[in-house]
Length: 325
Image 1 (cartoon, rainbow, N blue to C red):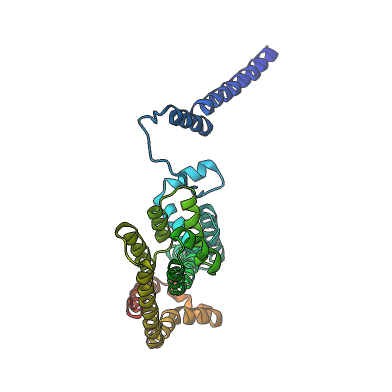
Image 2 (image 1 turned 180 degrees about the vertical axis):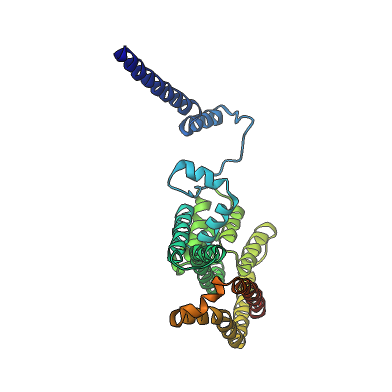
Protein backbone atom coordinates (compact mmCIF):
# COMPACT_ATOMS: atom_id res chain seq x y z
CA UNK A 1 0.00 0.00 0.00
CA UNK A 2 2.79 2.40 0.86
CA UNK A 3 4.63 1.58 -2.38
CA UNK A 4 1.52 2.34 -4.45
CA UNK A 5 0.96 5.61 -2.58
CA UNK A 6 4.54 6.82 -3.03
CA UNK A 7 4.51 5.76 -6.67
CA UNK A 8 1.28 7.72 -7.21
CA UNK A 9 2.84 10.80 -5.58
CA UNK A 10 5.95 10.54 -7.77
CA UNK A 11 3.93 10.16 -10.98
CA UNK A 12 1.61 13.01 -9.94
CA UNK A 13 4.61 15.27 -9.31
CA UNK A 14 6.11 14.33 -12.69
CA UNK A 15 2.79 14.98 -14.40
CA UNK A 16 2.48 18.42 -12.82
CA UNK A 17 6.06 19.35 -13.80
CA UNK A 18 5.52 18.16 -17.38
CA UNK A 19 2.23 20.04 -17.56
CA UNK A 20 3.87 23.27 -16.38
CA UNK A 21 6.74 22.83 -18.83
CA UNK A 22 4.32 22.12 -21.67
CA UNK A 23 2.32 25.26 -20.86
CA UNK A 24 5.53 27.30 -20.70
CA UNK A 25 6.74 26.01 -24.08
CA UNK A 26 3.34 26.75 -25.63
CA UNK A 27 3.32 30.26 -24.20
CA UNK A 28 6.87 30.99 -25.43
CA UNK A 29 6.13 29.63 -28.91
CA UNK A 30 2.98 31.75 -29.29
CA UNK A 31 3.51 34.84 -27.11
CA UNK A 32 7.27 34.99 -26.54
CA UNK A 33 9.65 37.64 -27.80
CA UNK A 34 10.89 35.51 -30.70
CA UNK A 35 7.33 34.69 -31.79
CA UNK A 36 6.36 38.36 -31.63
CA UNK A 37 9.35 39.34 -33.76
CA UNK A 38 8.45 36.74 -36.37
CA UNK A 39 4.83 37.94 -36.34
CA UNK A 40 5.86 41.55 -36.84
CA UNK A 41 8.15 40.62 -39.74
CA UNK A 42 5.40 38.62 -41.42
CA UNK A 43 2.98 41.51 -40.99
CA UNK A 44 5.48 43.95 -42.51
CA UNK A 45 6.17 41.63 -45.43
CA UNK A 46 2.45 41.17 -46.07
CA UNK A 47 1.80 44.90 -45.79
CA UNK A 48 -0.75 44.50 -42.98
CA UNK A 49 0.84 45.92 -39.82
CA UNK A 50 -2.30 45.12 -37.78
CA UNK A 51 -4.39 47.11 -35.36
CA UNK A 52 -1.50 47.84 -32.99
CA UNK A 53 0.74 49.30 -35.69
CA UNK A 54 3.31 51.81 -34.50
CA UNK A 55 6.08 53.85 -36.03
CA UNK A 56 9.15 51.66 -36.46
CA UNK A 57 12.40 53.25 -35.34
CA UNK A 58 15.61 52.21 -37.04
CA UNK A 59 17.65 53.57 -34.13
CA UNK A 60 18.97 51.15 -31.55
CA UNK A 61 17.09 51.46 -28.27
CA UNK A 62 19.16 51.71 -25.12
CA UNK A 63 18.81 48.81 -22.73
CA UNK A 64 18.08 49.59 -19.11
CA UNK A 65 19.09 46.13 -17.86
CA UNK A 66 20.93 43.01 -18.97
CA UNK A 67 17.84 40.92 -18.35
CA UNK A 68 14.86 41.15 -20.70
CA UNK A 69 12.19 41.10 -17.99
CA UNK A 70 13.89 43.82 -15.94
CA UNK A 71 14.51 45.84 -19.11
CA UNK A 72 10.82 45.75 -20.07
CA UNK A 73 9.75 46.68 -16.55
CA UNK A 74 12.18 49.59 -16.34
CA UNK A 75 11.06 50.92 -19.74
CA UNK A 76 7.57 51.30 -18.28
CA UNK A 77 8.81 53.50 -15.42
CA UNK A 78 9.08 57.21 -16.22
CA UNK A 79 11.87 57.92 -13.73
CA UNK A 80 14.03 55.23 -15.38
CA UNK A 81 13.91 57.17 -18.66
CA UNK A 82 14.89 60.35 -16.80
CA UNK A 83 17.85 58.59 -15.16
CA UNK A 84 18.95 57.16 -18.50
CA UNK A 85 18.72 60.61 -20.08
CA UNK A 86 20.93 62.06 -17.33
CA UNK A 87 23.56 59.36 -17.91
CA UNK A 88 23.45 59.89 -21.69
CA UNK A 89 23.93 63.63 -21.20
CA UNK A 90 26.79 62.90 -18.80
CA UNK A 91 28.49 60.54 -21.26
CA UNK A 92 28.48 57.71 -18.72
CA UNK A 93 28.51 54.02 -19.65
CA UNK A 94 26.24 53.00 -16.79
CA UNK A 95 22.85 51.43 -17.37
CA UNK A 96 19.77 52.19 -15.30
CA UNK A 97 20.20 48.81 -13.64
CA UNK A 98 23.75 49.67 -12.59
CA UNK A 99 22.64 53.05 -11.27
CA UNK A 100 19.86 51.48 -9.19
CA UNK A 101 22.24 48.82 -7.84
CA UNK A 102 24.74 51.46 -6.74
CA UNK A 103 21.96 53.53 -5.17
CA UNK A 104 20.69 50.50 -3.26
CA UNK A 105 24.22 49.64 -2.15
CA UNK A 106 24.74 53.19 -0.86
CA UNK A 107 21.39 53.00 0.96
CA UNK A 108 22.36 49.75 2.70
CA UNK A 109 25.78 51.18 3.53
CA UNK A 110 24.09 54.17 5.18
CA UNK A 111 21.90 51.88 7.30
CA UNK A 112 24.92 49.75 8.21
CA UNK A 113 26.99 52.73 9.31
CA UNK A 114 24.16 54.04 11.51
CA UNK A 115 23.18 50.66 12.96
CA UNK A 116 25.17 51.11 16.18
CA UNK A 117 24.21 54.75 16.73
CA UNK A 118 21.40 55.55 19.12
CA UNK A 119 19.45 57.83 16.80
CA UNK A 120 15.72 58.10 16.09
CA UNK A 121 14.45 56.01 13.20
CA UNK A 122 13.47 59.08 11.19
CA UNK A 123 16.99 60.50 11.31
CA UNK A 124 18.48 57.14 10.32
CA UNK A 125 16.17 56.88 7.35
CA UNK A 126 16.93 60.48 6.30
CA UNK A 127 20.71 59.93 6.50
CA UNK A 128 20.44 56.61 4.64
CA UNK A 129 18.44 58.31 1.89
CA UNK A 130 21.17 60.95 1.65
CA UNK A 131 23.68 58.12 1.12
CA UNK A 132 21.49 56.69 -1.66
CA UNK A 133 21.70 60.05 -3.49
CA UNK A 134 25.49 59.75 -3.92
CA UNK A 135 25.25 58.03 -7.37
CA UNK A 136 22.76 60.67 -8.52
CA UNK A 137 25.11 63.44 -7.39
CA UNK A 138 27.99 61.82 -9.29
CA UNK A 139 25.88 61.49 -12.45
CA UNK A 140 24.70 65.10 -12.29
CA UNK A 141 28.26 66.29 -11.65
CA UNK A 142 29.55 64.36 -14.68
CA UNK A 143 26.68 65.78 -16.74
CA UNK A 144 27.45 69.36 -15.67
CA UNK A 145 31.16 68.98 -16.48
CA UNK A 146 30.46 67.48 -19.89
CA UNK A 147 27.95 70.18 -20.80
CA UNK A 148 30.45 72.87 -19.79
CA UNK A 149 33.10 71.32 -22.04
CA UNK A 150 30.66 71.09 -24.94
CA UNK A 151 29.56 74.69 -24.41
CA UNK A 152 33.17 75.84 -24.57
CA UNK A 153 33.67 73.90 -27.82
CA UNK A 154 30.60 75.27 -29.57
CA UNK A 155 32.13 78.57 -30.86
CA UNK A 156 35.05 76.73 -32.46
CA UNK A 157 32.67 74.15 -33.91
CA UNK A 158 30.45 76.86 -35.42
CA UNK A 159 33.49 78.60 -36.95
CA UNK A 160 34.80 75.26 -38.24
CA UNK A 161 31.47 74.45 -39.92
CA UNK A 162 31.27 77.95 -41.41
CA UNK A 163 34.77 77.67 -42.92
CA UNK A 164 34.01 74.22 -44.33
CA UNK A 165 30.80 75.50 -45.92
CA UNK A 166 32.65 78.42 -47.47
CA UNK A 167 35.13 75.91 -48.91
CA UNK A 168 32.28 74.25 -50.79
CA UNK A 169 31.58 71.14 -48.69
CA UNK A 170 28.03 69.90 -48.22
CA UNK A 171 26.59 69.88 -44.73
CA UNK A 172 26.73 66.06 -44.53
CA UNK A 173 30.43 66.10 -45.40
CA UNK A 174 30.94 68.90 -42.89
CA UNK A 175 29.50 66.66 -40.16
CA UNK A 176 32.04 63.98 -41.01
CA UNK A 177 34.92 66.47 -41.02
CA UNK A 178 33.82 67.97 -37.70
CA UNK A 179 33.48 64.53 -36.08
CA UNK A 180 37.04 63.69 -37.14
CA UNK A 181 38.74 67.01 -36.42
CA UNK A 182 37.17 68.28 -33.21
CA UNK A 183 38.05 66.93 -29.79
CA UNK A 184 35.79 65.05 -27.44
CA UNK A 185 33.05 65.20 -26.31
CA UNK A 186 31.52 67.31 -29.10
CA UNK A 187 33.09 65.25 -31.89
CA UNK A 188 31.30 62.09 -30.74
CA UNK A 189 27.95 63.89 -30.80
CA UNK A 190 28.47 65.02 -34.40
CA UNK A 191 29.60 61.48 -35.22
CA UNK A 192 26.32 60.13 -33.86
CA UNK A 193 24.39 62.62 -36.01
CA UNK A 194 26.31 61.56 -39.14
CA UNK A 195 25.75 57.87 -38.41
CA UNK A 196 22.02 58.40 -37.87
CA UNK A 197 21.78 60.22 -41.20
CA UNK A 198 23.68 57.40 -42.91
CA UNK A 199 21.24 54.90 -41.42
CA UNK A 200 18.33 56.76 -43.00
CA UNK A 201 17.22 59.19 -40.30
CA UNK A 202 16.23 62.59 -41.61
CA UNK A 203 18.52 65.54 -41.02
CA UNK A 204 15.91 67.31 -38.89
CA UNK A 205 15.31 64.30 -36.63
CA UNK A 206 19.03 63.59 -36.20
CA UNK A 207 19.70 67.21 -35.18
CA UNK A 208 16.73 67.20 -32.79
CA UNK A 209 18.09 64.01 -31.21
CA UNK A 210 21.39 65.79 -30.71
CA UNK A 211 19.58 68.69 -29.03
CA UNK A 212 17.86 66.20 -26.71
CA UNK A 213 21.21 64.66 -25.75
CA UNK A 214 22.80 68.09 -25.19
CA UNK A 215 20.32 70.46 -23.49
CA UNK A 216 22.20 73.69 -24.24
CA UNK A 217 20.50 76.84 -25.45
CA UNK A 218 23.44 77.80 -27.64
CA UNK A 219 23.35 74.46 -29.42
CA UNK A 220 19.61 74.84 -30.00
CA UNK A 221 20.30 78.21 -31.66
CA UNK A 222 22.82 76.55 -33.95
CA UNK A 223 20.49 73.67 -34.84
CA UNK A 224 17.56 76.03 -35.42
CA UNK A 225 19.66 78.12 -37.77
CA UNK A 226 20.67 75.05 -39.78
CA UNK A 227 17.10 73.77 -40.07
CA UNK A 228 15.68 77.18 -41.05
CA UNK A 229 18.41 77.61 -43.68
CA UNK A 230 17.60 74.21 -45.18
CA UNK A 231 13.94 75.22 -45.57
CA UNK A 232 14.21 78.87 -46.59
CA UNK A 233 17.77 79.22 -47.89
CA UNK A 234 20.38 81.84 -47.06
CA UNK A 235 24.04 82.15 -46.21
CA UNK A 236 24.48 79.51 -43.49
CA UNK A 237 28.20 80.24 -43.10
CA UNK A 238 27.49 83.89 -42.20
CA UNK A 239 24.72 82.86 -39.79
CA UNK A 240 27.00 80.39 -38.01
CA UNK A 241 29.72 83.03 -37.77
CA UNK A 242 27.30 85.41 -36.04
CA UNK A 243 26.16 82.65 -33.69
CA UNK A 244 29.78 81.87 -32.83
CA UNK A 245 30.37 85.55 -31.97
CA UNK A 246 27.25 85.61 -29.74
CA UNK A 247 28.27 82.42 -27.93
CA UNK A 248 31.77 83.74 -27.24
CA UNK A 249 30.36 87.00 -25.87
CA UNK A 250 27.95 85.12 -23.62
CA UNK A 251 30.68 82.82 -22.29
CA UNK A 252 32.83 85.86 -21.55
CA UNK A 253 29.95 87.43 -19.60
CA UNK A 254 29.37 84.16 -17.72
CA UNK A 255 33.04 84.10 -16.70
CA UNK A 256 32.81 87.67 -15.40
CA UNK A 257 29.66 86.83 -13.42
CA UNK A 258 31.35 83.79 -11.87
CA UNK A 259 34.29 85.92 -10.78
CA UNK A 260 32.03 88.54 -9.22
CA UNK A 261 29.89 85.92 -7.45
CA UNK A 262 32.80 83.77 -6.22
CA UNK A 263 32.67 85.26 -2.72
CA UNK A 264 28.94 84.61 -2.44
CA UNK A 265 29.31 81.01 -3.60
CA UNK A 266 32.10 80.39 -1.11
CA UNK A 267 30.00 81.89 1.69
CA UNK A 268 27.08 79.66 0.68
CA UNK A 269 29.26 76.53 0.85
CA UNK A 270 30.66 77.48 4.24
CA UNK A 271 27.24 78.30 5.72
CA UNK A 272 25.74 75.12 4.30
CA UNK A 273 28.45 72.75 5.55
CA UNK A 274 29.20 74.47 8.86
CA UNK A 275 26.37 72.82 10.91
CA UNK A 276 27.34 69.32 9.74
CA UNK A 277 31.05 69.96 10.33
CA UNK A 278 30.41 71.25 13.87
CA UNK A 279 28.11 68.30 14.65
CA UNK A 280 30.69 65.81 13.36
CA UNK A 281 33.48 67.42 15.36
CA UNK A 282 31.41 67.42 18.56
CA UNK A 283 30.45 63.78 17.93
CA UNK A 284 34.14 62.85 17.80
CA UNK A 285 35.24 65.01 20.74
CA UNK A 286 32.33 64.61 23.19
CA UNK A 287 29.68 62.15 21.92
CA UNK A 288 27.77 62.06 25.23
CA UNK A 289 27.17 65.80 25.06
CA UNK A 290 25.68 65.85 21.54
CA UNK A 291 23.71 62.62 21.94
CA UNK A 292 21.14 64.56 23.93
CA UNK A 293 19.89 65.90 20.59
CA UNK A 294 18.51 62.49 19.59
CA UNK A 295 17.97 60.85 22.97
CA UNK A 296 15.92 63.64 24.56
CA UNK A 297 12.45 64.42 23.06
CA UNK A 298 13.16 68.15 23.10
CA UNK A 299 16.44 67.55 21.28
CA UNK A 300 14.65 65.53 18.59
CA UNK A 301 12.24 68.40 18.00
CA UNK A 302 15.18 70.79 17.74
CA UNK A 303 16.80 68.50 15.16
CA UNK A 304 13.66 68.53 13.02
CA UNK A 305 13.42 72.31 13.24
CA UNK A 306 17.12 72.66 12.42
CA UNK A 307 16.81 70.32 9.40
CA UNK A 308 13.90 72.34 8.05
CA UNK A 309 15.71 75.64 8.51
CA UNK A 310 18.89 74.28 6.93
CA UNK A 311 16.89 73.08 3.93
CA UNK A 312 15.22 76.46 3.50
CA UNK A 313 18.57 78.24 3.90
CA UNK A 314 20.30 76.02 1.32
CA UNK A 315 17.50 76.56 -1.22
CA UNK A 316 17.58 80.32 -0.61
CA UNK A 317 21.37 80.53 -0.96
CA UNK A 318 21.22 78.46 -4.12
CA UNK A 319 18.72 80.89 -5.62
CA UNK A 320 21.00 83.79 -4.71
CA UNK A 321 24.22 82.43 -6.18
CA UNK A 322 22.74 80.94 -9.38
CA UNK A 323 22.76 83.83 -11.85
CA UNK A 324 21.52 82.86 -15.31
CA UNK A 325 23.10 84.65 -18.25
